[in-house]
Length: 148
Image (cartoon, rainbow, N blue to C red; front, top):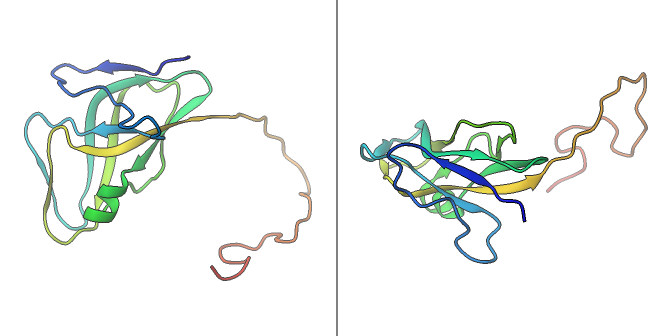
C-alpha cells in the first residue's frame, strides 16, 4: 500500500491527519493555531494553516472538502470546494474558510476544520478540432435539462 507522507512543521503538536473511523472517506484536517484562536465574523474569509506539508502518491490529488458539522451546524464553507492539492505540491496545506454564520465564532488550535479525500487523477492529451459530436443536450447551459 502506498502511503501519504506528511511533514510536520516546527512547533506542530497536532496528530497526523487521519481517518476517524474505519469507513471514513476523508481524513480530518486540524487548525494549526498555536498563538491562539481565530475569530470569524459573518462574511470572514480566512486561510487557516494545518501545520503539515504533504507528499502524495503519483497520479493522485488531495481534495479538500468541508466537514459536514462545520458546514451545517456552524455555517462554514470552503469557497473553492473541493480544493485541490496537486501531487507535486510540497508546501503547507492551508484551508480557506468562509463564514456564513451570524454570531462571531472561534476556531481554536486543534479544531477539526476540513477533510481531505485522496482521489485518482487521469490525464489526457488535448487536441484542437473543428467540430464536436452532437448530443441531446448540445450547448444547453445551467438548468437546460429541466427542473430540479
